[in-house]
Length: 106
Image 1 (cartoon, rainbow, N blue to C red):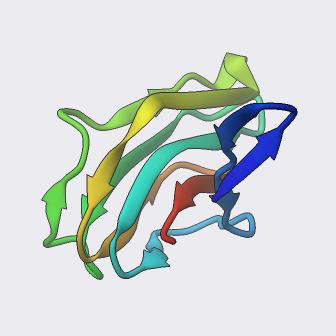
Image 2 (cartoon, rainbow, N blue to C red):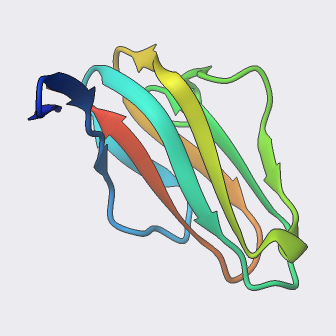
């Protein structure tokens, strides 16, 4: 979503509600801007982002993102974003975690 502040236009991404399991985060085409991951401070969390509605979609990033438990909260910033055409499916593993996906699909 584009917002004007003064004379400058900014991309202001939307975000999903917090999730704690693998699943479809975003439907349809758009741009993935990043994610916010919270751990329980004791267990690592691994996230893989797929272009599609299931885990069989192509990987949007070259590798799975591993968040160390000691980080507690980790932000993944994809700067200008990564285009997806079919949705964003997040494959996740870990214990007592949550994540939110930042995206735009307008």
